[in-house]
Image 1 (cartoon, rainbow, N blue to C red):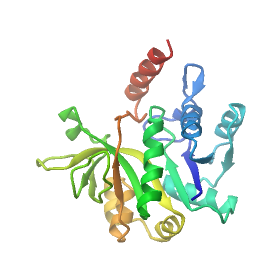
Image 2 (spheres, rainbow, N blue to C red):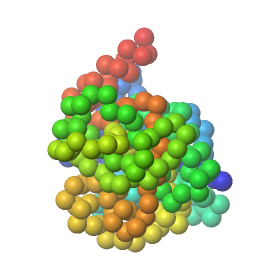
Image 3 (cartoon, rainbow, N blue to C red):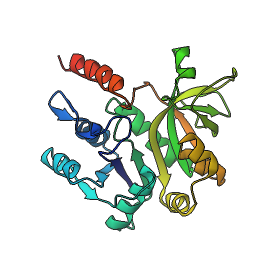
Image 4 (tube, rainbow, N blue to C red):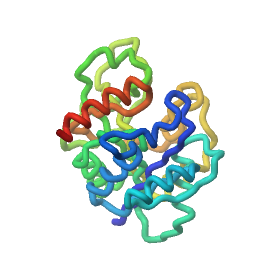
Length: 245
């Protein structure tokens, strides 16, 4: 099976404008994510963006990028446009790796791809164990509730995705910013209007569940922070600079 990895990215993020081009160890965040995806070696990798500055940065760092329209409401809409522009009929799976996850574990990326191939599911994602209970209240950290307890071998379905947990529940995990679609599932997803739950919670994965697209979840080995805020960026910069020493 052939997998294509597409990383959606844009400069106009509301909480931290310009974040894809913020530098850590002399390399932009978007190029760090690109290098991680290339290292996973599961298929061709490209960045989909509405910003020429991002395209220039990615190409300068040896990557591929494609210019998309600037009217997309979600990253998934953006990757679908990029997929149409490529027009490669041999692609079976499309992996959407978020452009603000420079600490994503390479083995976890490979594992998600392997689980999708082995189990022939419509849509897959990753989640990690929550070690700090404060995360339950943190609305910037998305949680997923799974139908079964996650382990390193299974690939259960998600019940729901939530931003804040007010009632104690079982099988709650930290959801990571990565999706792997069957190509036809991605086309179906894009054809649906944004669902009320999606708009209310600002979680596009709820559009899939609200339209009877199952999402299966694999257990990630690590629980990386995404770059949503200035505080996230400072924390990630420290971690990555320390690792580079």
